[in-house]
Amino acid sequence: GAVVSQHPSWVICKSGTSVKIECRSLDFQATTMFWYRQFPKQSLMLMATSNEGSKATYEQGVEKDKFLINHASLTLSTLTVTSAHPEDSSFYICSASALTGGAGDEQFFGPGTRLTVL
Amino acid sequence: GESVGLHLPTLSVQEGDNSIINCAYSNSASDYFIWYKQESGKGPQFIIDIRSNMDKRQGQRVTVLLNKTVKHLSLQIAATQPGDSAVYFCAEKSGTYKYIFGTGTRLKVLA
Image 1 (cartoon, rainbow over the protein chains, first blue to last red):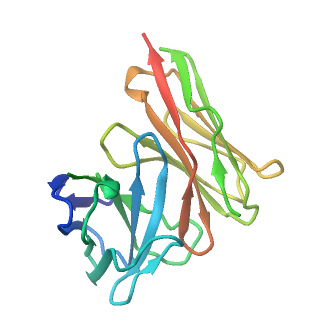
Image 2: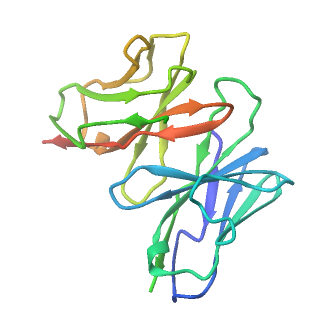
């Protein structure tokens, strides 16, 4: 199946700094990538959807100026958490899809990035 | 609003028994449903999917049942093994491409 990687797998940063997380589709071209956030013992919550070459679409309640998303190529999307605070500590997961508009457009998930803000 | 929910957070089964994990969804217009397995510290792993024009689909040791009348989805795991221990999420495709995840059920396999 399709492989999606994330880098780094974990990161610890100081409050107030910015952190960039990369999401790559390794063996297919992803027209759309999704960023999720997952708190401990909770489900995945969609943060935003990014299409290659266009601005990301953010879910309600997600600050676009705080969570900057760039999808510069068909194989790479980045999420930058700006001015991180302890409440931003979470597990961030990306997924990628080669959307065709059909009912079976599968999303392939990355392994996740654990962010800890001190 | 749209929601996909699971009521039971933990399911404990004996090794070798069958497991049934349930999921209720609220958007009757959803046309695609997926079950994911998530192990601690890892991303979701695709298990099986089903389209809304089907009511049953089988994979290796897993079966997904879809009851559109009551908006219910279930995942059956046959002969549950210790490696099946994980959190299981159902997800529905809402709209063109968005997935909405359920709250998750932790499956514990008892030796």
